Image 1 (cartoon, rainbow, N blue to C red):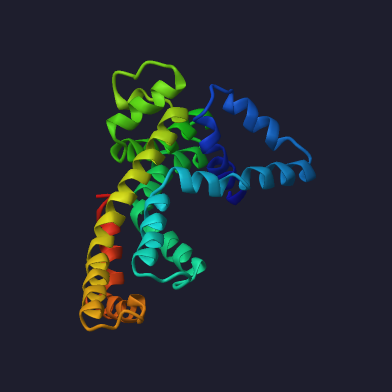
Image 2: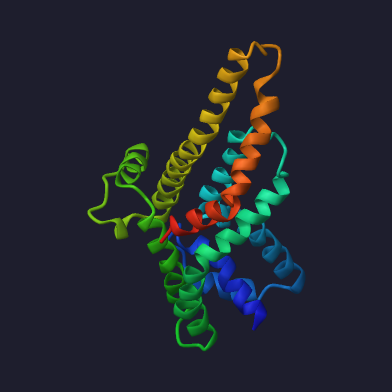
Length: 238
């Protein structure tokens, strides 16, 4: 059962991009020799991080967390691994309803032999498509359609995955930078106030960052910044 579930999950993204005979493809892979099965599984597994980044909330969350570090003037703290781990778990929080709908609509009916593989994959990918459409701006749909040289579909539900995914990522980048701009404002004000005070006191040889960095860290801790930012990121997808 685990192999079947893994097989369905791995094939889900690929079935969205082209009109392929998924049932024939699945039967062909399942009749391969064990060594070739392992090779095919490992090859498909290599694409999982790509689709996790492209089709979930991971991009927005990671960019906001990374730009927060720059706004505070911290170059390598928190480390990248810490930010990646936090972004991963926040992504799981925000995407858990989508994962559950995908499991109930597509994976479980297929495992219970209630749906053929092609319909199961379509049913399993529909929650992801709905999520991406809800987070994508209309102008990004239009921009991607123009780059592709095709007319914009009448409804968002008709947008193919090859156009939906880049449009979704463009929207996520735009939203992440908007949120990061709001994060920069209070820290920028602290930098300006500290620089003005040092100049007024005649302490022009003292680097402003020496004074402003502890102040920014103190303010961020006092307002419980990490929890506040995490809640804001998760709620931004509701």
